[in-house]
Amino acid sequence: MEKIAAELPSKRQFSAALNSIFRARVGEVEEFDICLVGFDEMISNEVQENFSLLFRASVETPPSQGIYHLTHEALGSMDLFLVPIKKDDSGLYFEAVFNLIKAVNA
Image (cartoon, rainbow, N blue to C red):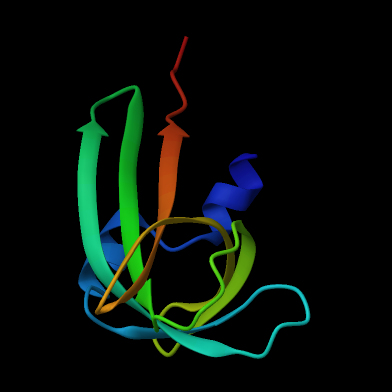
């Protein structure tokens, strides 16, 4: 699990990418644009980091939860588990939640 977390962009890198476009694909579905529109830091202490990302896709995007392959110009490629959470006139919104347990020196 540590290897997976190490391969993802950091919390700081994600927050710097706010309001930028990612290319997304799930399974064999055609790629589509998805914009990082929200970043919410929930917990950050010596034991864990917990934050969420909110993405917006077009209103026509199928509301499927699953592992999406995302590509970003500055952050590179990554696989994230995205869950559709709401839909309005602006688009379909997906959330990714991170709960990273920090190593504790015993």
